[in-house]
Amino acid sequence: MKIIQNIGKFSDKLLFFGGTYGNLQATETLQRLAKKDGFSPHEIIFTGDSVAYGGQPEETVQLLKKWGIYAISGNVELQIRNEKENCGCNFQKDSSCDYLSGIWYPYTRNQLSDDSIKWFTTLPNFLSFSFGGKKVGVVHGSFSHISKFIFRSTPWKVKQQEFDTTQVDILLSGHSGIPFYHCNNQKLWVNSGATGMPANDGTNRVWYCILRQEKGYISLEHKSFTYDYQQAQQYMKNAHLPREYSHCLKTGLWHSCDILPPKETSHQGIPLTFQKELFDF
View (tube, one colour):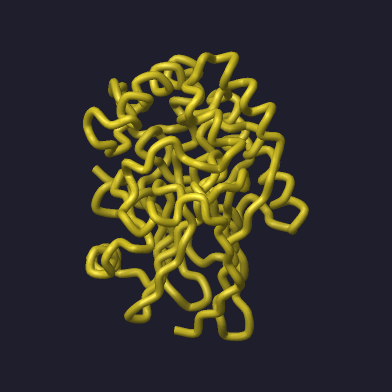
């Protein structure tokens, strides 16, 4: 059963991010950036998958919990709290990602305290609120399926079905790891990208997103930052986690494009660029 939480009317700005993946160094850096830019915890939303590939799952979860931000469950939190034996990431069976998840998922699950797992049980699957006169929803993969991969190239009819189901104007999402936005039919889908792993663009930057109300418009900014990835790599090495993911922290290249559609696969290694966008729909 989906847990749906309405958090009312948001202020004039919000920061959202996803996929910290047990990467404590990246998460700490984002927290400092958010504070520097004047975002209070109640102006910040996390789209799930607090843990996965990184070497400090417990520390990362405790940071997110104590931060006091809004958060929803990703598929990894859902699987762990339900005592499942796999991550539920929707990887193709016998793919490279499927094989490697059999290494990081047991490590991650075993590192987490009862307190962290209890926090997972409090997380809703879907958030809704009003922002700039628009109805906004927050999903992990999609509303219909928590681990559904949605990309910029995913046909609009697939996204439209999610808007029809949720009855919102804007959907904020995570899970797929690559930042994008797609506006059509007076609807806006935004993925912030991931904070704990680069976006397969050949840089070691990681991502988050900011929305603001500006004189009748809603502005959107995809923002990136760098951090001490070498320390994060060392924790992964100490935990004997897959080198494929550790290597990605430096190169910004995914070890596998198994989950990607052809268009996103063709963009591997090309640095992402975004400019500030204004929407008046």
